[in-house]
Length: 85
Image (cartoon, rainbow, N blue to C red; front, side, top):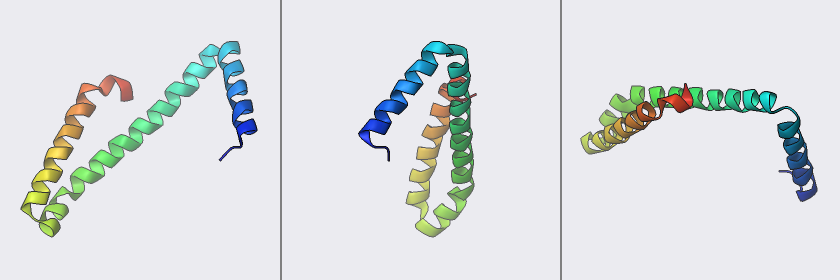
C-alpha cells in the first residue's frame, strides 16, 4: 500500500504520461485489459469443468444453481465479447 504522498506522486506521473504519450498509454491500458480477460476466460472454463464434481458432491439443487450462474456468466461474456477480445 502506498502512502498518500506516494499515491499522489504516482497519479501525477501517470497523468503526465497520459498527456505526453497518449498512444503508449492506450496500448498499455489495452494490454492490461487483455490479461484480465484471459484470466476471466480461464476461470470460466475451470468453473464449467468443475460443474459435474460440484453436482455430485453438493447435490442436484446446488449443481443446478451452479449451472444457472455459469450460463448467466457465459451469456454476459458473449454479450460483451468485444470488450475482452
